[in-house]
Image (cartoon, rainbow, N blue to C red; front, side, top):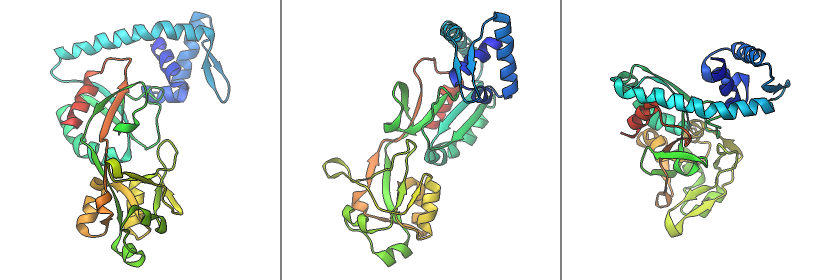
Length: 288
């Protein structure tokens, strides 16, 4: 439906992103928009080689169509109660750590239980404009949910620790207090919002934040952990991410009395829509 395609382009701000959301080619989306403009006799988008934005007519049409299509989506979703199980598509953007610790062990069971639901998971730590890029929900740490979104807890609090390999620690010493980190090689973290992360140690009144030194900055926890195992320095990470390495002895926790607990993984989605039955089933399965 051309009007549906128009809304997808309007929301995504790009023919390419709208095509990805709908699972069609960019040329098919462009053809639909040209056909719609020809039938309506008005231009809906200003197009340049670098940008795409709505015309005044396009803004008016989008404003009037969006709530009507939302009502249609909700009416269709309410039919789920007449089906034996949810169906449709669930498209989720998630952090690497959540993908490994939460989604990976539970996704096979969900797919087996709900064979009529198609699941698409995009794994990346950068902050994603969930609505513009066509995702149904996102998964992040509880304290980083974007403003204006509905949040739902998926896990309990998570423990953060500092770890290093025995070979590195034997050569450089084991830190006893947080200030000792300033004399170590630390594998620094750049967050999904592109700021350099200050390691948070301890809880309550004794909590401190350390802007650690280091000439290596990584934005991927798996790569950071592998670097630490290889003796490249100390890394700050979720304890659950390195349980195997701790058990095998390839990493050990330092400053154990200064481990800290932070918000668990949290799902978030737009507050402007009813939660589709397939997404509700997916989140409930992760939470169980």
